[in-house]
Amino acid sequence: MNRRIVILGSGTAGTLTANRLRRLYDRSEYEIVVVDQNDEHVYQPGLLFVPFGLAEPHALVRPRGRQLLDGIEYRRAEIDQVDLDADRVRFTDGDSLGYDVLVVATGAVLLPEETEGLVGPAWGKQVHTFYDLPGATALHRALEEFEGGRLVVNVADLPLKCPVAPLEFSFLADWYFQRRGIRDKVQLTYVTPLDSAFTKPVAAQALGGLLKEKGVELVTEFTLGSVEMDEVESGPGGGGRLVSYDGTEVPFDLAVVVPLHGGAPYVGRSEGLGDELNFVRVDQRTLQSKARPNVFALGDAAGLPASKAGSVAHFEGEVLVHNIGRHLAGEPLDGSYDGHTNCFIETGFHKALLIDFNYETEPLPGHYPAAVGLPLLKESRANHLGKLAFEWLYWHSLLPGRDLPGIGSAMPEHGKSRPADAAHPAA
Amino acid sequence: MTTTTYAGTPVVLDDEGFFADPDQWTEAMAPEIAKEHAIDELTDRHWKVLTFMRAEYAEKGTGPTVRVLGKASGVSVKELYQLFPKGPAKTAAKIAGIPKPKGCI
Image 1 (tube, chains in turn red, blue):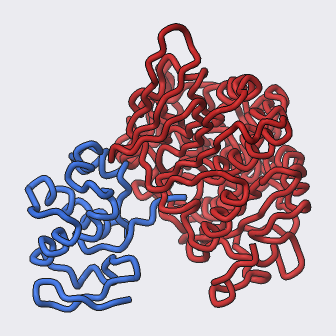
Image 2 (tube, chains in turn orange, red):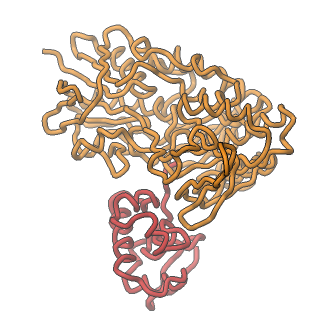
Image 3 (cartoon, one colour):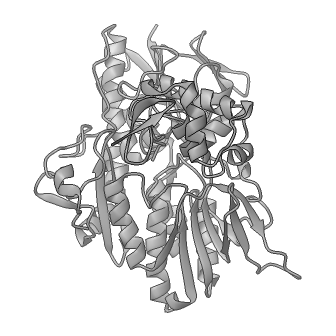
């Protein structure tokens, strides 16, 4: 009987992993089964553009099964738990599926209900998120109706998918209200649990500088405890306050909140698989589960000190597929993920920044991928065009599991200004 | 990097006041560090958090975030802020003698 590789989740990470494995192994050697609970693959980088009317919601969604190569079985089912002792995935309908190798790629879920007062009568009216399609669509309507006041962008806590997206939202909001001619009536505030605009100092300085340049107030070290709405005598229209655990309050008329994130709930129900936030415990270099050698995780589902971003899933995929091959051959794992991440950061007015970093190296100025290339940590039109071009690459190259020319898993060293030069970044 | 003395023993702190080498820390130093952060007395609840911080650092190589502390230390986030009003993750890390929690980005 064939050996079976089961991949849980068909988002960015699961899809590209399944396709890479299918290319590598003949179907007579390994059966590959991909499991997901719905059939809607959302191009998540596009969610940022929906609130500003720059992307149509329906254009971001494609069927999951259609992204998988022939010879991959796609199964639509809800996962109840993984039985690590039995090498078996159990589904809520009572059925189950055994595996020789399991890849967990079920991403992260939004947990707005974990913050007091976030999901209430104001949710979808004065309090929004753009981290899922219904949220981004509702926020588009709210922005269109917004005629002025205090707009607050808040990250509830870490970790979060695409940590630069809330910054990008703030930059684009500045652009959006200028274009509408009401920027002077809008007070923009960015509220973060970090002690600066970003985790790493050089990028924090550059991004903090951009916020200032665009007139966005920065509130740091604010961990969201609750959302409280003002009492209004009749009907909607009132604002509210974000309240931190230390009692600090930030008033708003319209709040855009990135809710708490966690791993998929079934991970928590699977003994030994996940951590306290339901992310899968894996070795940060090999992506192998700390609980079992035949279990791996990548993408947002993995509990790594890396960004939750599509580029991470892409770079991890290359290493993971290599390591699965070593495991299947009974050899020690030698593929090593270095934490490589890169992100375009849209800044409005048809410009964007690019950052590139890994576990050890913070985002630095310079060029990517080599001394000649896209500018790093510096606004440019080329980066904006790169961000727009990425959508085509995503569907036609990244998801099918092809190598992107010049963009490998290991972070390129060439082209970066090292720390001695980076004390005063050009941006 | 600076050198300071707690419980009669010199220790090295980084630029933000976190221990550069967690092995230099002893329990006897904790009350002195706590006083620097306006915490006059370390209760059992404080120690529950500090012990958890040390264990997490030993296992994972970084201290936990506030949210992980709230989920796993047995002390709720609300109480954590009562115990360490100026930010539990950083203040508790300093008192527990571990480097600044990295957090994920």
